[in-house]
Amino acid sequence: MKDPNIKIVDYGVGNVYSVLNAINYLGYKNVQITSVEDEILTTDCLILPGVGAFKACIDNLHSSKLIDVLTHAVIDIRKPILGICVGMQLMADSSEENGKHSGLGWIPGKVIKIPNNLNHPVPHVGWNNLIGVDENSPLFTRSKASPHFYFDHSYVYSCDEKYITSTFDYNGKHISSISRGNIHGVQFHPEKSSLNGLRLFRSFFSSF
Image (tube, rainbow, N blue to C red):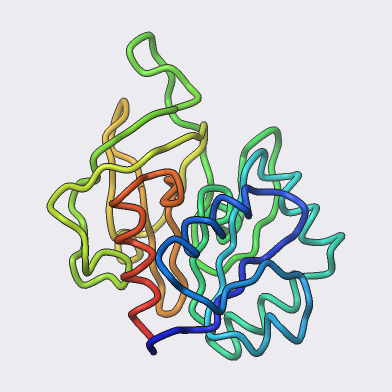
């Protein structure tokens, strides 16, 4: 699809305009920020950004009445979706951030805290190279070897190996990206990751 219809989900959190600016920079014309049901259900693909705490994000999805709409679009209609940072974490069954909270349950797993020590302070903020990148993943078809991306987080996804498409090392190996069919997520911020982030967006939008 040469110029897909792209919708960035607006649920009151997240750096939606940074994502919008990065995608616009690539020259895509049909990209909008939205929380409108019909637009979510008829688009070609979705971006689910996220910044801040898991509970605030999942609560905002509930209060925005978007959970059923998104689940229908992603699970029933099988719209391609990319979750970014907390947007990826929301896809888990649960998170232990500040208590236990239920997630969307789209990719079985849970969100856990990164181990902390003097050499690896939490939150983890900065650049890391990815390890074991799945070159067949729709997110990485245009990536160079061991691409580096910008991270800003204290919690990580934990799930079955079959869903993992890359990892990173920060006081141990952690998941940096996941996929399950049409559902994809990245722990890092492609919109803040310069050329590698732009390559990832281009790979994703060229995959359907």
